[in-house]
Length: 111
Length: 112
Image 1 (cartoon, rainbow over the protein chains, first blue to last red):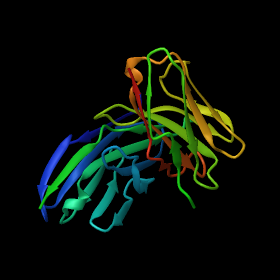
Image 2: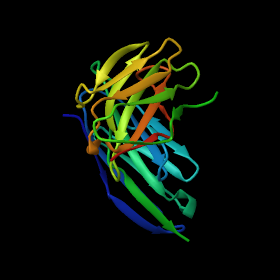
Image 3: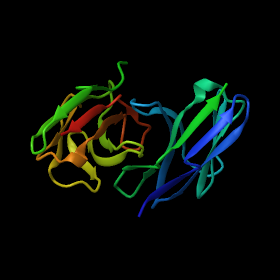
């Protein structure tokens, strides 16, 4: 069964304190791994797509990396506006094309 | 480019009733998928449509059904509503089934 596990469930950081979020996955035929940011009561906002092991993507203070079993979202010198829930999503291949979501990591950045 | 829009934003229904939620895909996107997100949980895949045909379904009962129209807008219908159906329902569209998805802001359904 396709599965995505994110850790930690919640993370509190001080402004400027860098850290990483983990996403481990098992999926039959990975088509892509996505990171989304979700604010309370809103739909997920797309951040990155990763397709193959070794790939990295960067956007402002965020950097996503991918291995064969895991992905990391590195947050460098976070600001309070980075506070949100970060969702890791994998897309299975083999004809199903469905997206499988992790439960998310709730990040709080204190000023 | 208008993004993905969902309607209504909030809805309250009584147990046993039926509900229809609507989604307007981002311009040019021919793939749409629906998700149910319970409070504090990640979204759960309901089903996906590609060019008006269902091409994937999650573990939801048949009372969850959908449609995709020629203009690629979409509906999610839920019959015989149960209290546990209370959730945020998200619609997402993509240029193709393998691409990145753009999400709408969701419809918050409350069943009482």
